[in-house]
Structures are given as C-alpha cells and as structure tokens.
Image (cartoon, rainbow, N blue to C red; front, side, top):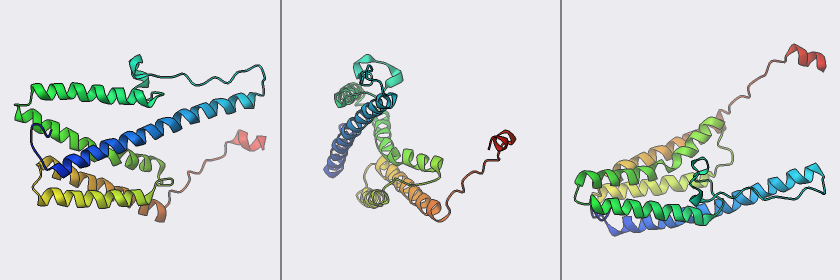
Length: 205
C-alpha cells in the first residue's frame, strides 16, 4: 500500500513490528499445539495399558501438501513462513502491475488495515459463544484499547489515509465491545441450562 500511496514512516514501522510479533506468536502456538497433540497421543496409549502399542506422533501436515482441509493447521512453523512469503510475493507482483490504478491501491490499503482491525473479532465471538470471558487476559484487552485509541487519534490528527482512521475506530469499537462482555458476563453470569430428568433416567437411579 505504501508504494502506491505514501504515509508516515512510524505507521510503516508499526506494521513491520506487528508482523514480526504475529509471526513469533504463531511460532509459539504451533509448537504448543504440536506438543499437545503428541501428549494426547501418549496419554491415549498409556490409558490402553498395552506394551505392544507404540507411541505414534500425529500425522504431519505441510504447506506443500496443498490440502485445503488442513490449511493453516500445519505441523511446522516453516510451513507458515512459506505461505506468508508466497502470499507476499504474489500480492507484491500484482501490486506492481496495478500500481498506477488508484482504485486498486485504495482498495488494497483498505483491505490491509481492515484485516488488522478484525483481530479482536474472533475473541469477541468466542466470548459470545461461551457466554464467558474466562481465560482471557483483561490486561491484554486494556492494552489493546489504549493502543488502538492512541493510534486512531494519531491517524486523525496527522491526516493519515482515511483507511487508517476508519479501521482504527473499528478496532476501538471491537475493544470496547470485548470490555463490555467482561462486565456483563462477570456481573450477570449466564445461568446454567437446567436439564429435565428423563423418566428412564429416574428409574435407573
């Protein structure tokens, strides 16, 4: 986006730092997930109490398998890096071809910052499904809200491209919505659904 429409260097560095941070988090998540899958496999074999069984690692999934059923569920961090580099290369080439089109450049910029603005939506939806914010770091959300608020004010005051301001406001809205969930689910917890005992179950007891 910056090649088609110049914006301030601090915004560029913020994007670069964000990408590096997300990659580090992705590396950690991949290692933890693969480790957990292996531990579950070990526990299942231990529960079977059979000496003839061998502990087998879960099947490895690779980016180069091109299996859409396991897209973004690969076994190695390098597969994610390959995917990101491929996406960057293809997007960069298309951007180079359409660099003179203001419509393409503006759309690309909007999609880029809109994707970043949606980072909190999966957490928002998960909280809604669980009717709880248990396990979520409230400090993290407060830091999100503070950072997004300062960032949005910076966008507006420095007259950054309108995509930044709009999506910054959207990020703040999502952060506030998550904080409202924290308040609602802590002060008005969801009542557990009462299950009516089946007659057969009563007799069995």
